[in-house]
Length: 420
Image 1: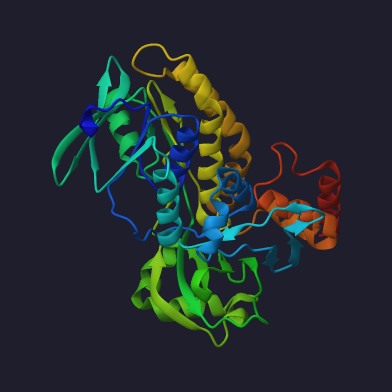
Image 2: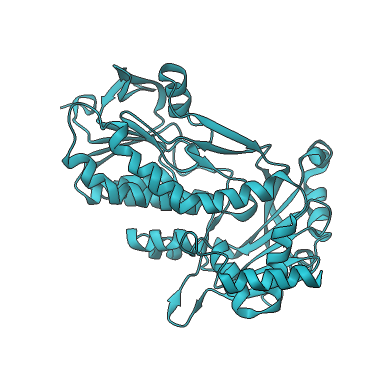
């Protein structure tokens, strides 16, 4: 039987973090999955390297976290946040809880996730297959058409998942053809550039992720150790400066990192390795993630400003929701597609779990400076260690929804406000 004639339960377009995670979770439930991607692997991808604590818990449940560590992924055990009037940190592994995050580049991470998905007999993987159209009948998505070196192919399934990034072809085609996946965009005020550094001294930087805010107007910086003994360092700045910044990427990246509070000192004596990467101009994008026969995962459905490094974790946490809900979808399916009324629970769960973080990112990304509420929260975290721990758990996407800020944290914020 040819692959085109096989009966699949789900087709996933986009094989990186969100898509591979969904394939693993569906295959564990005994589903037959077609996983496709327009790229060949391993391949580079412009992206954050950070998986926050909430995301690593999903990786652990999936059974792939140890593999990513063996490939060189650094489990950062501490988070530190620095600003003009605050500096606090907190341990991510203590009192019997392991909330450590992970830092690993996309070449290794994506390839490992795909290998994990392909290890399931129920997963068929096709790379270098470009989506050309969706198969749509009576307003419902029934599958995909794609093209590779061998020609045009057609695949059918009751569920098609678009995990193909913020410029999702699945979302675009469905929007044009059946007015699906309505979107809302909020432009990011900052641009982002990053590079790798070799030779960062242990006395300067341990296994921690460090974030800085407002070392210069609108500036932000991040630094964390990653694979092969390297350190990734990123800078964020007013997007209006991007044209000037691009005139000399290497020198300007160094200059922007050196104007930081602490990051420049951490990189003293280190050598920049390879090229400078850029995210370009970005939007925060919210899409209604479901339509008849299809849903969106990861950046395709919810793309956030990279300032807080939430993208990987949002992708993994939303894939986890699919894994939890899919058994019910497939056990009660009627007809050729899973209808949006059944998929609506995914939207409800995704938004309940992830929108508090999305909204926090949107607020921070619209303005170049920290808003008053964020500044008071950071100041409060600097005053008491328990408050720092609470702030960091929220930043690591571990705090249950509606649990931050706690009542006593809100009282401490009010005290910080009065002191100001």
